[in-house]
Amino acid sequence: MSATAYSLVGLISWALILLIVMEVIRTYLVVSGRVPANGFAPDNGGLSPFMQRLARAHANCIEGLPIFGGLLGVAIMTSRTALTDPLAYELLGARLVQSVIHLVSTSEIAVSLRFTAFAVQMAIGAYWAWALLS
Image 1 (cartoon, rainbow, N blue to C red):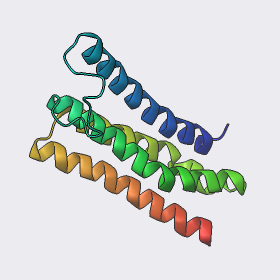
Image 2: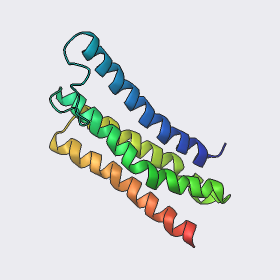
Image 3: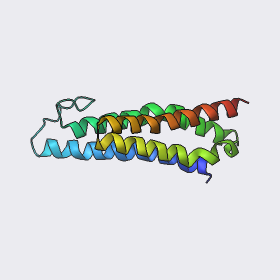
Image 4: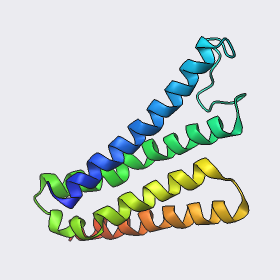
């Protein structure tokens, strides 16, 4: 597989990992009687700050997947991965960094670093869109 394909699988897998972690914790909360099965809001409102950050980190992954995953998919489907391969792992790395920072802190510096990781993804995505359309 190309770096583009590995990165696409990585983006999907990371979103899945965050979802699994969230559902394992939610299952524990239900089984332990701390939260009723129907007591969860989509944003994990009413739960711990970590659970709220986990839900938001997962949502960020899902929101970005059609954009960044779509560009990777177009490159694969059109046999133009030579355009995306050089920055594919950087995009995936920036996504992972953004999510991990989101999970560990909401301090001012953490939010700035998280945005920087997102800005890297946006810049790569914009470059790929331009290159694929050229």
